[in-house]
Image (tube, rainbow, N blue to C red; front, side):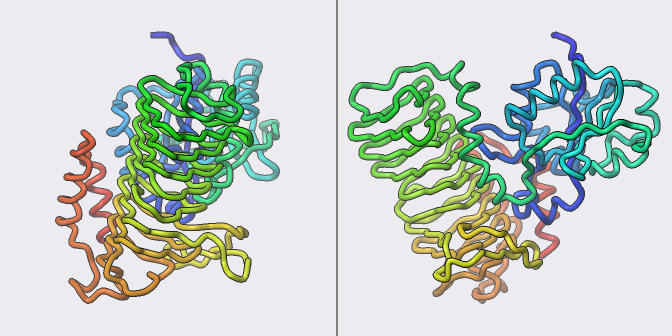
Length: 423
């Protein structure tokens, strides 16, 4: 095994439990998907000289390590030269090129800023690591004992994912940037019966199935189709778009530009500039636009998100009860892991739903903020006071995950209980 020349420590920033809600309930910020890959995967693939380490909230980090089969022992022994970086920075080609050059050419330590914000620190001496708590849960705590006044400053322009909708907005550009990486892996030829526009900007992996009547339109951006994907008859896919490994596009689906599908998603109906993180189902008709959908979510037939106000005004959201102005005219829903909607569910612009909620029997539009473990919705359901019983929710989660060959980890169960105790 080749020894890494440098160490990159990705650290969660203070406050992300609220700003990245509901994704942050179950996930660390370096797991955010803003293109075909998650944040940590882009660093891993782009910086082979670096050994990647993680600092963040304990349970979320443990859950991540368990799911990725990364042993804690493999993350020990952090030594100089060490680059400490905010985990919510969305790396692009420009960013990783500069970081590599900084590390290779850097003979001294320095601070990295984006405008006036400190986003990273590069330390070359072992003595500079003394007194640092490299296992602290936040970037701010990790760097709090560094003497910044004696270090030179380097400034770089970066993109950050402060809120989940930032990932959605970055998706078109991120998909296009990832084309070069995936072109080295996905080299299969499209079958002749597929109608393809700008075929040179379409990548296809192994063991994919393409039914008759499919239109792949890469005239406005690339289409990246990973291995084991099935696209059924009369589907339309518009680039830029990324379809993850093992996903299924149902017959007649309309997938518009800016859409990212993680692994093993089943998608039908109409989707526009939305991210399905992975293992999520939207198999039937209905529109989902400008949304971020978590893992193990199932959207019932005709579930539809509104992503534009009748007034064309800016959309605000409620995150843990706090009103946030998004500055966006288009925003659908942010949906936490394991949430399910009944047939015909309609979600208002900027709806936020926590984890393990079952949205059904509502009789009208649900509230714009629905907390975790809601049964119906807490405001509208009289059954069990509108609360999804924890043990029943866990049982359903195990059934759903087992069907895809996955098991709930011990850290995930603790995260479920931790969130349940907040309601």
